[in-house]
Image (cartoon, rainbow, N blue to C red; front, side):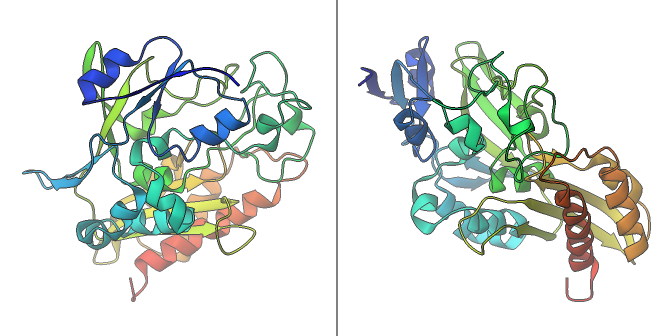
Length: 325
């Protein structure tokens, strides 16, 4: 057993002071504890922040501030989330069992690590994310669930969060605190592509604590669609979060994000550029999906994801622009 120090933070300032070298923040523990059990994560200390930054508040500007310690269940069931940001509520409900949602926190959900089987197989597999320079067995191995966008020779793993995909589509802003002060990070910039260092997953500095997520005002039309191998508690093969504003059949604003296809929640900028200002219709939706997936690269076992992503993008856009939307 690896000895470690445990401390419960009184507030965000206390937490960042206690986050010495080798320490990790502990929220709901739904991912970190599993990683510790598998000895993939071996922190020297745990700083418990599960009681900090809990709640959802509306700001004067109309944004919503979600405390990083707020449980996923509370977010999905909050009246303002359900009314204004249905894409987020749907993504959370699609993401895990009720028991996990009751424990999982907002900040922890964003920082969960990949579920690549080779990442977890410490004794029998090579994984650059686990140990840089070791190699990536997924590239030539079982890669049905792996990335088709933004991957590298070093890593083809995907980010597992459903919630993060919805938040990327909502242009969410991450509020953080460290010993150097506070800062705000666009969620689209939080996670990094693998490059040659897939073990460095975010731009957060050591000891930097996520304190809140800010949701700017959003159009009411939004949804989340997740395609998976079974109907409950499975990670996405492909998912799509869509947010749209229409004006007499014209797309005034559109935001799309994909899950299950890349090392980070994938913002579909190419598709958005084609759709914005144009008329809603299947031909436009297909052209946008094709543009977004034009640089997708299939591995031996996941080529089906390209057509699956294409169809899911089109289906989400049709749902958002249909008469019943």
